[in-house]
View: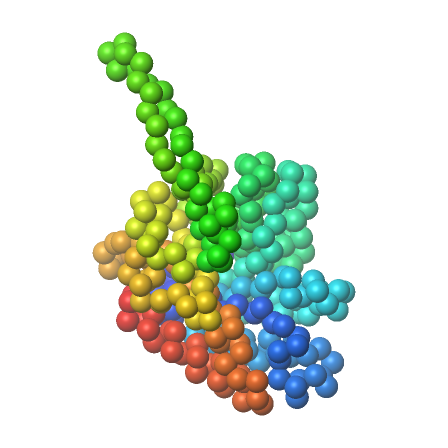
Length: 288
């Protein structure tokens, strides 16, 4: 999916909602357990109920990998069931040496036909480049995440040194920067705003002004709204790409998983999921 196609969907639906299909087979409604594929049946009903309210679905592969071969079968059936106009994200957090990343890219883009895959940046450029070589596909790089562990590395400060000459005088300048700032700045040069997004957690709203300055045109995948307590209003105000009505790009996909898919554990779970998604969509529409 191209950037323009994604933007068109956002403004057509008045929504930048991404529904996370992080389907835990121990939490789905009990009446589905008698079906031949409970996970897929759950996902199918969620997709049917929310498809017109969201522009994207994100599948966290861990919940499917945990079930072995039958989990991968449920995942593949789910990806194939999602309408082609929706932006399909594999939340797999891959990243390895170049030849291994090439196989990961092949798995998610060719075999499974996702539009995007989340990747980790800490093995460097050669671990991400293979994901950027597919036309119409995206790498979504971890930038500043929503979990408490972001403080362990991403929010650690480092001193960076730059050297310059001013009228023949050597000048040494030291800057104190967060690690995530260094990551955003460097990684943004490896691709473009047409094939590279960043994961920026909704629980870090105070950082969004700074993040927009570093990556002014890139889309962000924003988890952490809903069950993790992030504010949709605050994120929308701080993280959207500024622009007039003729060039506005929105620039964010806000992911909600548990607050939508587990809105009910009864037989009406799909109806309640739709109600939860509709609340997000109505609020998003007011910010566009």
